[in-house]
Length: 247
Ligand code: MF3
Ligand code: CO
Ligand code: CO
Image (tube, rainbow, N blue to C red):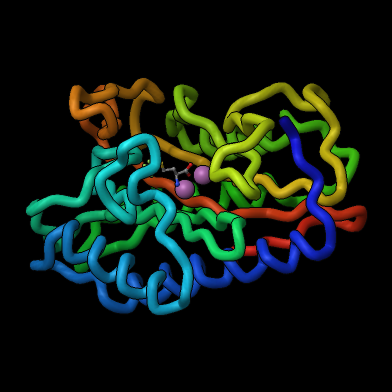
């Protein structure tokens, strides 16, 4: 079901999303080579709780942590563990927070230490894909224009756009309708409406778009072992444009 948020609900969304943004900023300041992905998860847990919110990934469909920490070839849903973050890694951190019954959701891919030019470029283009997607976006825009913008930009750099995972609506539930694919044909799909809140989250691979779902039930990696980047924000659709709630 697609939900349209009232002004009061939008105020709650803003607050949850601000907490998500601040938490990611905090992780960005503190992530470094030598710590484990579990150390990152502890930072996320503590920060979100200190804001009076709940890390809503914890326990979601049995997920065992407060964050997804995905290193290099891990696309998304990396489970925090004893894996040590190394110099030259790119680390995607994807978190959600719930307060007053509403969720915020965002992800960043951090560069740790001396990162190769190839990986830097991948991370940069992945972020650009998000900003291309929100260019001109407003109430009335066909939904699949988002995927068209992401796909066009990523593929112009020779990258693979993950299809097996998509963005989504968000609100009282972490995942609401509609699905927001990162590939698509311009001018198709439902028209966006003012008051919708959606997560736009390009997942871009250096090589093939194909991914592998691991037996732990969560971890998703690239099929060719090449690196992958993820960038996500929660976005409010308005009649004039968009408000990016997690920036
Ligand atoms: N934050 C993720 C998303 O962008 C969802 C994580 S699900 C979890 O949709 F179970 F891993 F937490
Ligand atoms: Co997310
Ligand atoms: Co999301």
